[in-house]
Image 1 (cartoon, rainbow, N blue to C red):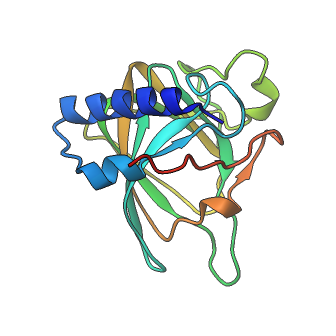
Image 2 (cartoon, rainbow, N blue to C red):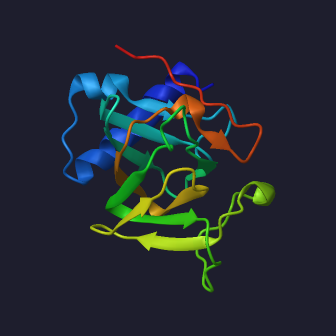
Length: 182
């Protein structure tokens, strides 16, 4: 888990990225920003900041903020009850994001899994998203993503988000939410 000082530092870094992209963030939104360190103890390498605007039993809208070369580990959104799993559309707002999904391997790949973690990154079809580009990930599809050298902001529009049910390829990953800072 991140220390209070690290939490504040990374929230301010995310806020700076959002401001540079022209995205206005309220004080309440900033206080509620989640820093998903995923219990891996290496936030700058594997993790991300999440700013949830809305999430109910029908749909969800959020910003995913990644530091330079930061990676969100491979995972999928499985069926929950009669729901087929979360379907999400990623729209790149700033920077570049390398999205990897199941499918035929790309002949040219830019993003690389974090060193020593290659066995937990199996989706090899790379989609490069630059500002204005978007891609829809079907439910229950393995995927992971990594920011380019300037970090990235991705707007996510999806069906209901139930992060607690996400299935990560790396068994060490745990979904850990940082406490609110008021």
